[in-house]
Length: 162
Image 1 (tube, rainbow, N blue to C red):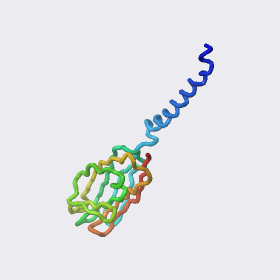
Image 2: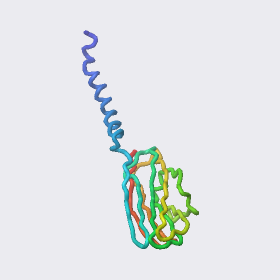
Image 3: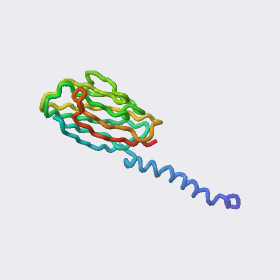
Image 4: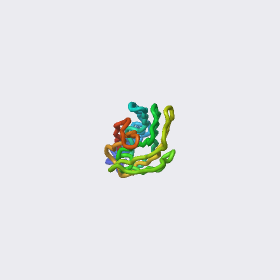
């Protein structure tokens, strides 16, 4: 007993250190740092644009986005223009259905699809992964164009936690 007198505080120090590690893990397990998605809608100009995208992500996380277009008028050259945050500090793994072509407008990616007639719907799924070293706010806005004429735009930012 004489040798253990100075160690009476040690179990409490260990418990506090373990609790400090357990609290963030508990929050992460409940989705507090997670990836709940927001559904955003914009319309006008002959089409309806709907985007499902997370508001908050963590480094290394795999995630999915859904972009739906419903044409109210014919669109000869529908193009989805993704904000720079879709590819900066992200790995764009797949795009389904694949676009006819891809291009760039500065830091933004342009996905071109075939003609949409009134009533047609195009649903595009993107699977991405956050680079483990990424953090900050990313521009995950989406714009719908008919060739170069803007039809609808959804401004959105996603916060990336380290």
